Length: 252
Image (cartoon, rainbow, N blue to C red; front, side, top):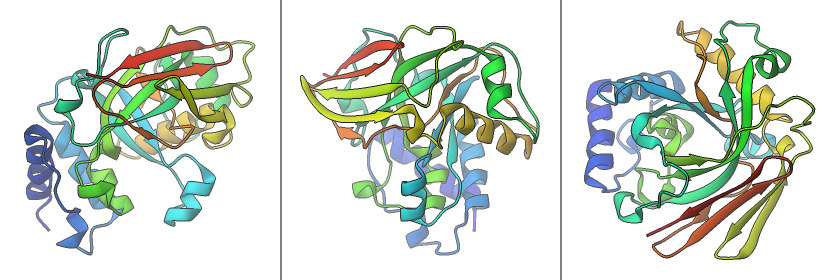
């Protein structure tokens, strides 16, 4: 299959804000390796990378969709929302928000044997964040290779104020997601691969396979901790995490 043509389809869907059928409808042989090849092509022309995002970090979700590991995507500068900056819903196809524990890397980290302990030692700060998912596929219908090709449904993200990770057991950090003043979901950090740092370690090991790694200053979204909530203009979403504070996202 023509990997560049698949990347062009997804780029057109994103820039025209128009959903398309999943790629595997036309290419049933699409696999994860090809999905990541498409994703690498999507990075071209997006400017310098600012970090990475993880997906499918819940063990239950992995079993549900038939995979045994997370997936990852890249974060470019145009994914960033500054605190207080609204999400313009019309710039997205079908935005959904989920709470995340976010890592800010303090030094480079790479290799096939990176552990959660290594991640915590290399982390300058952790924060609560909100990731805005936006699938380019109609009705969020896709296979795992499809969503990998679509950069793991990356849309936008906003990060609260980072704090040093020392003394915080991120497995036990309680997280609350509010939508228009109503609590819609709760979770703990353990929802991300048992420990958010374990998810980031998996990412570092996976990137090593293509000669890449985490860099000082990188932002890493360690995986959604609850089901995502669909948002529209006028909505307000708040994510709060024990000892990490809160972050708010208004939609217009």
